[in-house]
Length: 384
Image 1 (tube, rainbow, N blue to C red):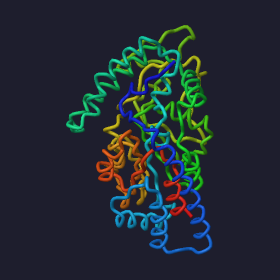
Image 2: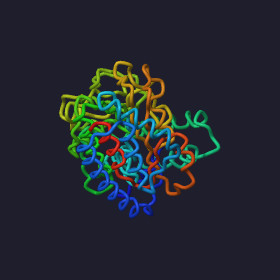
Image 3: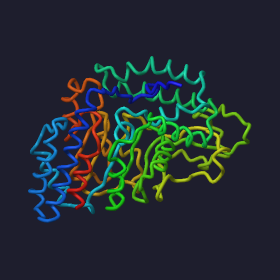
Image 4: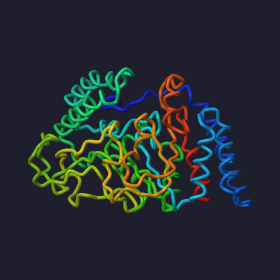
């Protein structure tokens, strides 16, 4: 079955024209990065020298754009000087931790057999109406907001009506990974391992589905722990007999038997070495009842969605994203970081037409389906 991954907003077109060039550049980046690591181990450098060496290392790759070299050097110096103890990472999921050519977390769920022709017809109709609004350059974010909320809400209603069970999530992720539709970005697991080993807080902030993200992390064996947390839209489950159909709406006010005791909380608990388990009952008897509130979409991903107690509060931050709204993920923090290095993955089919916009909001812009090598190079320099 062919799945249209544009059924949810935030889908970006990916071009295969960058694959060969990105692969060659990534290989060079890894080789040179390994050399730099050995040099730094033998001859420790002052932060400013270390930052300059890293900057020159990144500039070897023509698909890495740095608009303000002096500012990036200044930020790298600050992050390196502070080390791992001062660093926190906030990362988008879809087409950031996953590849630009990957289906989204919603797209992975859409491989589930329970999402039948009725759901697909509804989702396709919603996409035909709302996608042009999302991509309209003449509209402001404020003008797009109500439409994006409506898009998510209507599709979530359709998903609830389809009769999804919790066990379907694991099977959908497994098949999507096996079929090569869901692709974790090369080097992403290594990035997660570096953060975990260095005890660097890592927040995965997504307008997608927390349940799918957790399942992917478990199935790919990502070494995450208590320092890793997810803020995303959570599917809310209730215990139900095996034969009971779903037919429940996200807006339903009847919350009995919900697995989260009726809480409308989009935040997950920290992951204790894998995906968190919020429902003790067997997943085959857990029926999708609704979605968490408030709804998280691509234009409200900021710290207003994160409880103050769960905000890392560290002075230095690394922000990873692929959309123009992702750089704002730390906006509204109770204790804003003093230095934020923003790295963006530009996954559009015509990147040249978007570079200028991305360079305005990201310090470093990566073209094509880049690996996590540039991010891991920064990690290596900061945490070494």
